[in-house]
Image 1 (cartoon, rainbow, N blue to C red):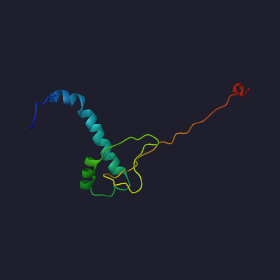
Image 2: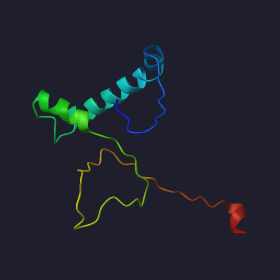
Image 3: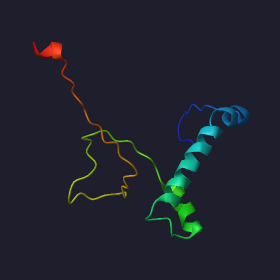
Image 4: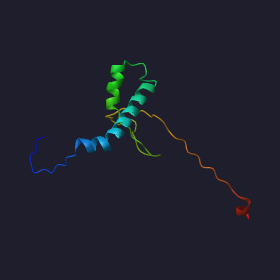
Length: 99
């Protein structure tokens, strides 16, 4: 590392890193691999290219009504909707509420 000014660094031991983060990273990597392998757009790609794609994929979770893009916007990424959740609201009116 080369710093041009006074810099504070935090050093994490390999043992602590392995204990805290390696399991999470392995699960994240497996989720990316599963997504690329199971998506119909990529499932027929050669394994070499699917692996490269998995290295580039990032997951974003968006809320309802979040702005993603608009027609004619210049994009720096490709967005693929992996899954969505349809929420419905059911209203029950009890007999006692009607009086």
